[in-house]
Image (cartoon, rainbow, N blue to C red; front, side):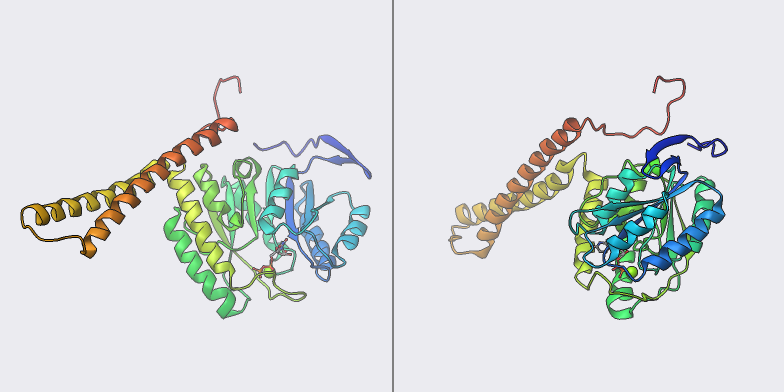
Length: 336
Ligand code: UDP
Ligand code: MG
């Protein structure tokens, strides 16, 4: 895993000449943050140069409509360690992260926001933790500088929920400032707005996660790109992550259990009603209980069928992508 950074390999020719293979890739999704760019670039470069390791900065312009792109283009013309990936339209932060990860060549990938809320000076701290052997190091905004009602409160609730549902215990899932070992992040498939779940997803593929306290600053320029509606989406995403993590290779266990439970209760109620009718000689045609019994049986059968469909989909998923149901860390004396 550890590349001998003492002997940098010449890998790639760019318009600006050959570039050393980077050791650290910093991936930054950016959407309409023109005012922040000059300072972001300056402070980040300062920190990264002080590291003494070859690096690259990958800014993913997520369809900015302000002056961000021309500005980035100017900076990139001067500095070949700055890569700019421009998406065709605004695809959202998660997609922007994925676009950056796909192009990152470093062994370690650091992510952060473009709006100067994260502090590049925390990067060495994260990298030190990675060097200790962790696969993912997540920033914890101990002193978060955001509004309480629509930011900190929802995220407190979300953090609690996520930490209870996933088995990764962090204080702050939403912090973008994180560092990853590149091979771990490559195992993680990102969809929707799942970037805050990367630690949870990565731990599902077997990565070791650590958390370090980091600085946080108020947003100085521009506006936040999110509102309160994000909370609902986070909760729905949490259900997805829980399901994929726990049951993705056995969907019938979730749906089937619910289905058998519902149908079982329905059948018991039906038997009881049959006894009432045939032994007690009472009319049951108008009883709400009859309706409930029928409903439970129908719903139960549907849930079981859904589970079976899920099983088929899961098989297609794994087999069509040649995706095994396990992930190998390393093989000794193998041919791999
Ligand atoms: N961002 C992005 N695409 C989007 C929304 C946001 O690339 O559709 C970037 C944004 O430019 C910033 C980061 O994601 O660098 C975090 O966004 P923001 O600061 O608005 O979120 P907050 O800090 O308020 O949670
Ligand atoms: Mg922000």
